[in-house]
Amino acid sequence: MTKSCQFCTFLLHDLYLGVEVERVQEVLRYQAMTRVPTASSVVEGLINLRGQIVTAIDLRRRLGLPEREPGRQPMNVVVRTEDGIVSLLVDEIGDVLEVEAATFEDPPATLRGRARDLIRGVHKLERRLLLMLDVERTLAFDASGEAAVASGRG
Image 1 (tube, rainbow, N blue to C red):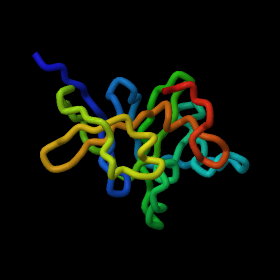
Image 2: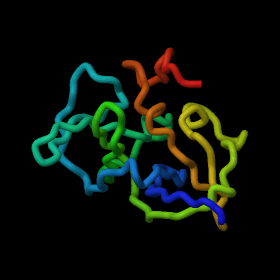
Image 3: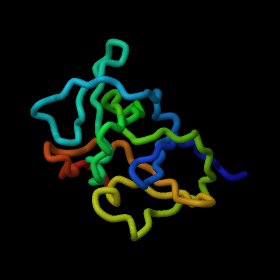
Image 4: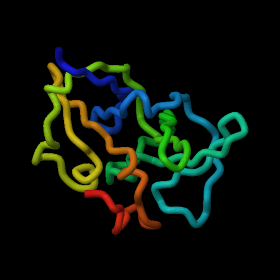
């Protein structure tokens, strides 16, 4: 019997990404945000999620991708972390996808820039690659939006 995993998938620029389903609290349409003047450029703002203040991270900026087209609103993937919940701003929500553990591979050598450090691995699908986002590393950044120096991870 082959072990399988479920991922909540989403699109970001030309990347097809996934986060483990058990980490996802919910997905939401665009929410009004309050800017945080001195925060890192990857922090888009704060949203009020039924009385809970949640930080919204722009994944395009975090991964060093081009800015979203003007007038196009991002979607929120609200994930649970060790430090609480955080909203990841993405272009489009995908499906919940079940993949076999046997299809897991290391990130391809063609993956460059910040994305290379934040992708844990890939699953080869029939027509594309599902990039597995490392949520903890994605949220470990300094004020400039670059990876935190001492994350304590190997």
